[in-house]
Structure formats: C-alpha cells, structure tokens
Image (cartoon, rainbow, N blue to C red; front, side, top):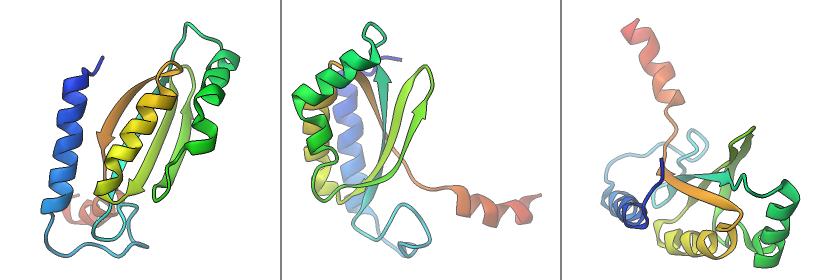
Length: 136
C-alpha cells in the first residue's frame, strides 16, 4: 500500500497529539519499550527499492549521509530487523518533539533507496501475557 504524503503527515500529527495528550500512570521504562512518560515509539518500514541492487542502495545511503546521521541525536533505536525480500523495519523511541527531526532525516537521506511507511507503535506483549490467563 502506498502511503500518500498527506496521510503520512496526518498520521505523524496524530502521533504527536496523542503523545502530548496522554495522562495517567505509565509503566516504568524497564517494563515496556514504550519508555517513560514524554516518549513515543515509531516503527518505520524501509522498503527496498527493488529496481536497485543492495550495493546501489548502500551507495545512495552513503552519499546522503544516512550511515553517519541515523538515528538523529536524542532518538533511540529499540529494534532493527531485516525482512527478507521486503526491506528493514526500524523501531525508534524518542520525545515527540524530535518527530520532525526523524521525518526530515528520512526524507533527505533514505528516500531514493527506500520507500517508507510510518506506524506509531507500543509494546503489547506484557498486556497480552497479563490478559491471557484471565481470558482463556
């Protein structure tokens, strides 16, 4: 599914607003990858441009400064996986005010090597483990 630029901005705007509007208790940082209050988690699909070889993609990323600048300062990589035949999936944790920095770096350095998709995310596994015995 191709994500339009407008829908990406709408999604990112909703992410910032939801992070700013969050109230109530939040799990300690060591209990969940969503982290402490005032942080948000974003999963980015970096889909390989399959018209290019891996060497061509890496050359593009080198020329744009991707390897030198990603992730931006103040942004933590929670996980980074390769999905064979698709691309890479990177999950980041950062304060919502750093969202613009993440977006600009993706636009400036990753585009041309990857098609990108953005998803606000949170860790569900602990909740699943807590609910499972109650609901089975």
